[in-house]
Length: 87
Image 1 (cartoon, rainbow, N blue to C red):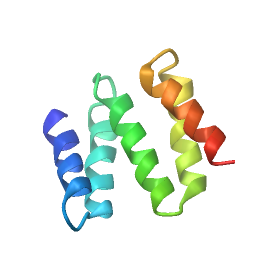
Image 2 (cartoon, rainbow, N blue to C red):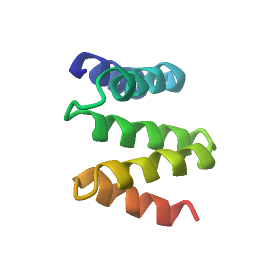
Image 3 (spheres, helix red, strand yellow):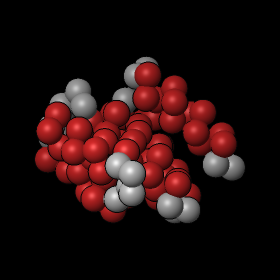
């Protein structure tokens, strides 16, 4: 899970970011390692990319998943803030 997360970060932070590849890596963390501690950060990064790509509906779904499944996490607090900004 850590390798996929950091690959996502690398794709996201390159001089020419590759959002699609980054999203794939973050989604892989959530799908393939659902109980791992890296899932909430991966989902938050995924939601950020979705919002940046203009897919606010998917971003809201991802952010609500964080709020529902990882209540009390730092990512849940960030998700709440981002949801308010996406209104």
